[in-house]
Image (cartoon, rainbow, N blue to C red):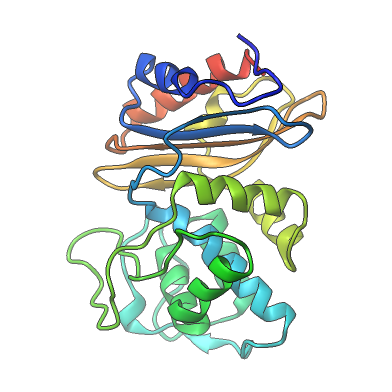
Length: 263
């Protein structure tokens, strides 16, 4: 069942996800070398979790290109401290550079770095850039991230962050084609991703996947830019309303192994 040079029926990815226990799902697989595309409910409103870090860093890099950010290393604020999957090197008072914040937010999914970027970039300014300039019409930065309970106190909260699979696919395509200032930097960071137990675990030998994951107690996501051993390129984004766990990661890997055979 190979992707044809047209949009496949939505049932293709939906059935594949259901077979591997990844439901509910929002997914897109799109060729960067032709018109092939498959999608299943890509605008489904699933909470993005740490996927939101990709457009936030994109906005920061666009602003840096314009010299519209103060790049003086600034101390990490105690209010931005929260849990992470790994130990964060960003202790309160440490003076972090913009490069450090962007690198840690993507490669290690560091929540402290992300919260510091919220303060540096500004959520309204970041939301306007990704909507009006990058075309991410349903993306919004409304709350800082918490790695657990209690949640980070965020007096400026205006709701929940939004970044659906449809917007993620669009942004990854723009990153892959260097369509905005800083895209090449962001691609490099995605290639240096340290969390590789989901879709990455189902790749074929020689494949490369520049990607980002997102996890909470209720959702588990992965998405990015797949370059096959033969040089073909695809955007693959899978959002699920499935709790993050080792078992869920194994389902992502099985999904990718079967999907990869169709590409």
